[in-house]
Image 1 (tube, rainbow, N blue to C red):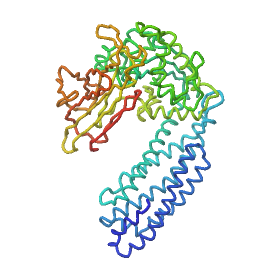
Image 2 (image 1 turned 30 degrees about the horizontal axis):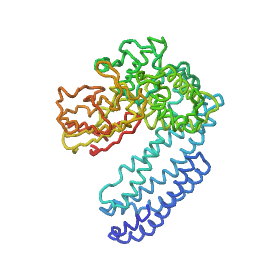
Image 3 (image 1 turned 90 degrees about the vertical axis):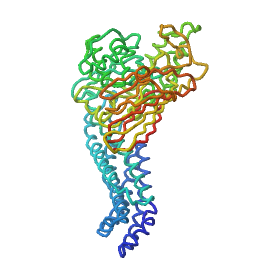
Amino acid sequence: MRDLVLALLPLLLAVGASAAWIAVRGLEAQDRLGAARTQLTAARQAAGDRQVPEARAAVLAAARDTSRARALTGDLVWRLVGSVPYAGANVETVRRLAADADVLASEVLPRALDGIDGADPVRLRRPDGSVDLALLADVTPPIVDSAARVRAVRADLATLPSSFVLARIASARDELEEQVVELSTTLDAASTAVRIAPALLGGDRPRRFVVLLQQNAESRGTGGLPGGYAVVEAAAGRLRVVETASNADAPNGPVAVPKGVSDAYRVRYGRLGAFDSWVNVNVSPDLPTVARVVAQRFAVQRQAPVDGVVALDAQGLAAILTGSDPVTLPDGTPLPADRLVDYLGIGQYADFATATDQDVTGNNAARKDALSLIGAQTAARLTGAGSNGEALLRGLIEAVRSGHLRMASDDPALALLAASGVDGALPSTSRPVAYPVIFNSTGGKLDQFVDRSVRYVADSCDGDTRRSRIEVTLTNQAPAQGLPPYVTTRIGADRSITSSTEDAVTLNVYATAGAELRSATLDGTALDPDTELTRFVEGGLPAWATRLDLPRQKARTLVLELVEPVLAGAPQVPEQPLARPLAVEMSAPVC
């Protein structure tokens, strides 16, 4: 907030005698807040390194400065001048910024550090690999409380004056708001984690979860093709892997449509094999519904109940293993975390390719054995003793934050999964939506190289409806040469198998509930909505689908021109977890 008061002086002269008072006290407040910012930056770094005593000392020093700044800007004169038109907006903003900064330094961060200190992974994780649920219960209140307090600060910042505010003051407000949003997001995630962890770890009763190990080089709705699965049992804070299988070993065959799955879902995804085979069980992007189908398959084929389903891919595995010793391949070759994504996407198929391109599958049995070995070592890190608890915790947080680890369950004790948005559900129907989803249409693994971008544009909030546009661009960045045959597999409509670096996907674009299509183009050429697009509704959201061939280095752009209802809230543009990130651009007012 440096130079805030200097920016205010021209306006404050009109206030008369109060100007000198505000200027003198404001200059000192400015210096105090600047010093506090420096201390809080140091505290953040120390907390990130788990140097809790150093972080506490820095927060205490910052609190002394923010408390003084709050006192300097919180007296009657500041409040009276804050009600004056024009100049008042700036004075009021400075006063409340100082107050909010003091709440953060004096109340929120000390409580958060109590939680961080108590949640030391070394103490939380017992020597046998189980989690101390009693200790977890002790650290829950400070984490939950600090999350609630920072949400209150965030709400106050959102109500600060926006008109007649000088640029320097607005910049200071925006900077603090950005930092508060980041802190709030982190603490909310931590709050959800500590509240849901006891149930996830079987604190109240044993639970059984299926982990879908997704290969997102061949895309599916929830991310990637299920290359295999693991069954994890949780009881009294201890996780145990009781079964693993590759998709070649997983039993296929039709299962009945489970309760909670709509007829529309059955019709659309049933013809794509969602109820018949493991590799297509997750063609839909709606993980809660996919989880019900997976649970039904286990109930029929394994005679075992399933309490939830985890979707985990190579990026999620790499995050979990970061900071740990490398896993090893069957020949003893170490595979560090930073090479895991490339290996699972491409390297495994090169390692186990055969001498002839006629057998594109290569030595499939040996390859799947190698993947099983990687899976077993990863499971041991998660469930066993001796691994780096802090690195594991950081990795799990990153995997969840990035969307490469998601979990869905119908268990009421795990309802926070949905409330926190980590259940991979379709977006809410109560806010605007632009959500592109692809699934592979060749049988190859070229989706590893697909760049994706989406642009959502909408008119003003006036009236009951508005025009909007969703533009989705896909580009195949696969190299021209050097890829193993299995990666470049292309299965034709007649089931013939060829090799090609031309990819093909089915693109689904979900839009705002109630939206209607006005027109559509592909690469600038008009499409016939009746013959070249398939319209369907899933989870209350309208969607349009088309198959796209993706030649190398050629961008393909689908544009949907829509009329959508004007709904309150910020637009939702979820990201399907794939090998490459989704680029997002929005130009739509928040109604």
